[in-house]
Length: 263
Image (cartoon, rainbow, N blue to C red):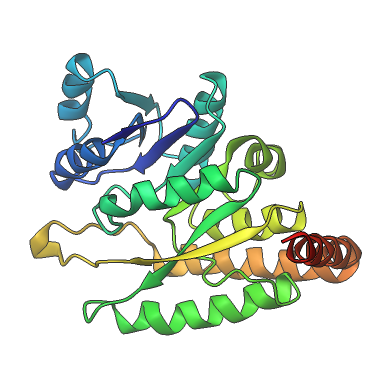
């Protein structure tokens, strides 16, 4: 187990069910501290964690009064992390899809590159739903357009380390990015702000309902939200963002060339 004064694990949860306790326990075996943000859950899944937090100082549970969406929960957690002096947060799902054993590698890469965002690149197994796999390929292609081909290998995978202050700066004042549009909008807007993406492969597991897997993705509502988000990002790129993106790209290229020459 690794403990850090600057990097914490942030886990948003909404009606995750009995799997939540086991997931948090596994994360605590790999990293301290952990911040669980309960996004207005009504299934009581947070109660064992509230009890655990009384005896486990590395765990903090933030309970939000009402359900506002994944992005809203993450942003609330990031604000709490900033107020406690943390500079980086690894965000992961509460249902066990993301590998707790990989936390230390992501955090170490972030520690060596504090100005970057560390983005998980999913390694899928045979359990991946095909509709998600093909839909993800479309999202990857659209994100390339929104960043002029930038190296964001997967805009949807939620296993990531974010620099806290830059993310709050780019998404905090906005109304969007509060639900399942959060992961994509966070990555794209951080890139626009000059935050370099570093991609790190990571396995992902999909659990069946019999295994306790829970999905709150609403296909009509959330797909409409994603379509509207992409439309806004593409329009904003074409009208406002492309000069800054090109400047940032040239600056990164010069910096890499200078580092190569110095070595």
